Structures are given as structure tokens and as C-alpha cells.
Image 1 (spheres, helix red, strand yellow):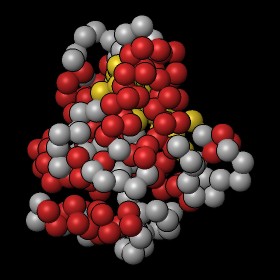
Image 2 (image 1 turned 180 degrees about the vertical axis):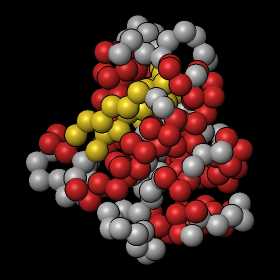
Image 3 (image 1 turned 90 degrees about the vertical axis):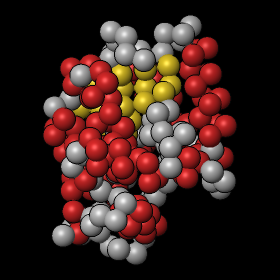
Image 4 (image 1 turned 30 degrees about the vertical axis):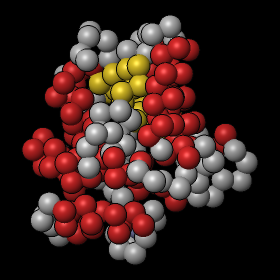
Length: 201
Ligand SMILES: [Zn+2]
């Protein structure tokens, strides 16, 4: 996959996108990787801070864009968010002369997901649309679609991803709340690999 062009990694600040960034740095070298954080709303402030820390850790170019004003009155979530994020990333990537965008989504996440823009069929169709809409100049890479969450965690451990800098809680308090879906998923992820979450130590 590694031609001479740069790659843009959608870095959300959680575990999966951070592992994706680490793998991209391994594959492309840090000078060819751009981390892109698309943020919305104060509630996701800690995610955004985490993304910045991870990008700094890997010494890659870091871009952040506020997408909260695409829809009026956004409090928590943006409809068609993944579609918006991937399309926005495509524009950023083209403006930077990059040849690919990487989006971290694993098989456990996309299987039977309630939101249609989280399903694998959606991502595959977006990949085709991006290829078509750029005359093949830009590709959407989905490196984890054939991997389970456990495999992503194991890859992260192997690559030495600093999980302590990542953030999964949906609330932006000083410490993770331990109760939301983000915290729940994160606890399960560390249990899968029998490791303690360094953020909670
Ligand atoms: Zn939480």
C-alpha cells in the first residue's frame, strides 16, 4: 500500500484509531502520516486532547477541524457522522496531496450495528465512491475490517501504543466515568487481552 504519497489517519483519540495511526507510522514512516481529528462539541473535548497527545507522541503532522457547525444545535452526535467524517477527510487528504485515508473500524464494531453508517457495506461503498470521485487518486483504507477488537488490542500491544494517552469515555471529566458505553467497551477490550487499563492505574 505504501507508495510515495502521504496517508491521512482519522484519529478520534480512542484505542482503535490510535492503533491505526501507530500501524500507519510503521508502514509509511512518520513524515508521510497526517493525523486528522474532526471534533464536535465540548463533550468530546477529552477525545480531542487525547488525539493531539497521540499525534505528538508519534511526531506526525496533526490537523484538527471543528465539524460541530455542520448541523445546528448539535449536543451529542451528528447524523451521518461517519459519512461526514470520511468525506471531510477526503477533502483534507486531497488538499494535502495524500493518496489514502485510513479509518479504523473492526469487525466486532461493524457487525450488526444499528446505525447504517457504521456498517461494513457502507464503508465499502464509501471506498468505491471516493475512488470514483477522485479518479483513483485517493483511496479509503479500512485496515481493521477483518480484525476483531481483540486482534486490534493485540496489535496495539505489539506496536507499543501508549494506551494511557487514549480516551474512550463519552464524558469529558477529569477521569473516565466508568459507566458510559465508551467506558464499558474499553473495559471489555482490556479484559479480552488480560491487561489492566493504564489510564485507570
Ligand atoms: Zn465513561
